[in-house]
Image (cartoon, rainbow, N blue to C red; front, side, top):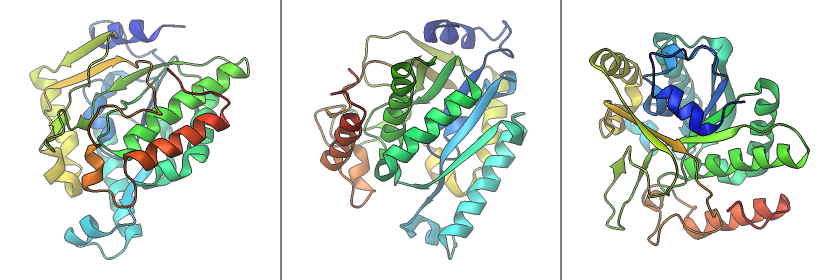
Length: 277
């Protein structure tokens, strides 16, 4: 089985064959998959994509601004956008998995999420899982980073093979000022690569991003020219990712950093471990 560092090397060398890499890309929301690895999705015939949420929060503020009357209709449109983007990138529906959780609520369903991630890993047997970093940008991103680790830990505890974990950069507040930085990791001493997209890859990625018409305003903040990836570091999920409040406290109601970490500690306790660091 290839190590996460070996997978990084292969992803950085597209002239080498990538088709046989058994990978699982687990993302929180529709559009995260294109931002994370849009340049390589057409090359990775062995990759499956799993969406943890339907991309539609119960808070209808954004949906109403876009003209949607119900959450279900908004979620259905986001699903169609994802189908269109993935079809453009050559990812067939047989390689797409939808876990069906509600946007912004993964932390409240952490045990169920771990179960679903562990089940997918057992079914697909990926060499590596690629998912979000723990960075305080969005609670669903942080929760999925934890859930994937807990799912892998569970498999190891049961004597079952567990994949390595690679992560992609999302967004975070880099200094507590409230500004948003995208596509950059918080510091960690782990193997890291940045995929630099050639003109054809950039054009194709922009076309896929354009499929997400409901997210156009947010997606303008992301650079389509590079895709940073790294071997997932050993996080202390019971501690904050940085000394200042997480960025998501600005837009998610009812879930702040202390509450998220309390839920994380409870999940870690139920797993029989103090933390994953």
